[in-house]
Length: 513
Image 1: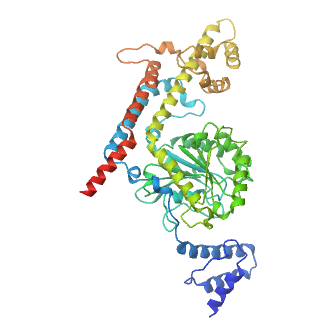
Image 2: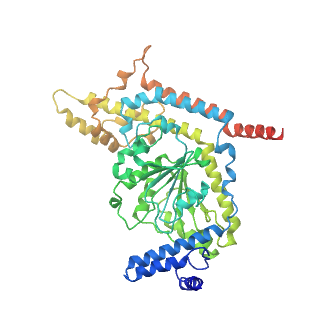
Image 3: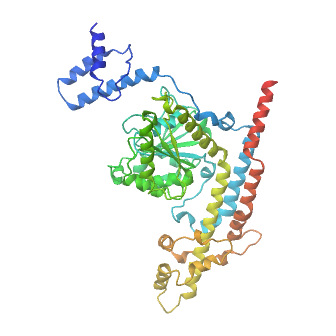
């Protein structure tokens, strides 16, 4: 009797606490035990005791509602047929052959000139490994804290809250960079193990220091989608915190993931639309990657028509100074989790938005191999221009150096004013070099501080080809203008979608038989 009375009082007393209104509590919970526990703390009359009680009661309330609430209609996963969850047969062989050819072209034709001219130390580049080439497409989620990033990932990966899943909550719950990968059994991988495994594309992250490795986690989960896509959950952006308080170069780490992501989901909720210094610095690093960005307007089912219009307009108003493109990124509006919408007024719109997001996720899997070839070719173009630029600096220095005058001063003059010595004009005299791809004089000066100009040879001295040695410049040009386009053409001629449709037809015929 006392237990029932206390339960009824609990419901009345906590109607003013967010999250308690209209919630039903599980009948099997021993509330008297919790009351005795809390009463012992109240004798000390401390703030921590009261906070502990509220947290326990909120957890009880959430446990009661999560089991009883039915799931909504799922339109997000309609574009994830089994064919793309696990390649098999002709499709798998096609992909394996193309990726093997791509790795051979990189190591034989592109890497030699990268090593000769230290391309990996230029403008944040790095040594490319087979793990980088074989890596699945990456989906990066970022945005303010408690905007629903982790919940969105759980929903996409169909992770149930009663099993292995990303932790979620109304307070900041993700303080690490969390990489979600496929594994046969759920297990946690610490940051040090991730960066020392050269089969994975994360070895470069060791350069950000041990402070960051303590904030890097990997989770292997038995999700079909993770067989072909990797998800990265990032710490929520908290504007009242200075970057140095994180203990590692947060913006540099974010830049690394942005460069390598195939799809970037920027998640907002209606209560966190302000743009502060940290979010602004992240959008600065998103410049040049606008085609990857999709904005998620989450938790929109709590808004009525007028509020939704105002919030949608406020979001664009706040982001417009940060995204300088003619066509703004696509904004998906909805409530991205498995539970029912709180208001069905925009149910059809929200379900359609989820379907379109599923199409985007589907397309990065479908276009993954083509994107990988294009990325390697773009890297090769950049490495070639870098080598031609180093050659131009070296040649101009040799022309103006003297055994009488101070050559070090002349070298610094060329670094400071390359236009006076026509350095970049010499680079542009080569075929298939765009002036828009030329590096800045400042980036070249920074590079020569790491690797002195005297340590490099002219390209002319490396152009002698014989039976045992091929000219690195000719090799990389053959790859850029011949082998990689041919590989892309071969892939387009044997389009993966056509193979998929053929495979689905074959499986259907087997089923009918």
